[in-house]
Image (cartoon, rainbow, N blue to C red; front, side):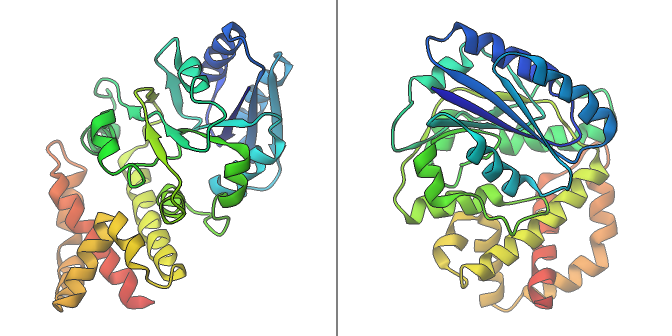
Length: 299
């Protein structure tokens, strides 16, 4: 039995839902598709609400934006079945056996992650960096993800037992974008919950333009630092996040202030490279590290 849970915000989910509905009807199990719209703009909510007329689809309208973490917890509370499949709304199914692959792992005290993939280079050059980053940093094979299974946990495509989920849930203090998956993976790790990675990716089609993605990245770094503080600066959490590990080393040897100075001096040049035609991901890594040093120094 499957409850497919999709938090929705400012995105048309018709194609995703119809694909899932078609697959679910072919399975010999009960299933449902739950959509919770997080106060989207009218053009999205009016179109997506039509899906509520379909069999097996339930639509919930939230009048106030509550954020992705709280929305996922909300959907879990509405689910009728034990196996919760959480998907991001800006994904597309690229395998006719997508739900069947998850169904085979049902009713186990584990978390199952399917992965993410990216398509061809977008025509809009303003979306190039988001695609380029996704191809090189987020699209990983089962073998790559399985080397550090908890570190590789991603919220956009995974299955978890409802009772197990109730013990952890997502951190509802995270309203802005970023690192709710990192913290969830951390909680699973310190509680010895197995994370299994399988070859069952979704295609990420909701590519943001550079300025939107860059803004979200900075919000994510701010979230990451707040989460780190909330763990009382737990080294186990820091060891799961490469950015935090490097920051700790930089602070230990006393170069964090140099990195802040470099950020203030060269941030414009770094951004110019990243939004250009030949971005360097190592420059992006330095930008994030230096911005983290600045955020940490303010707290």
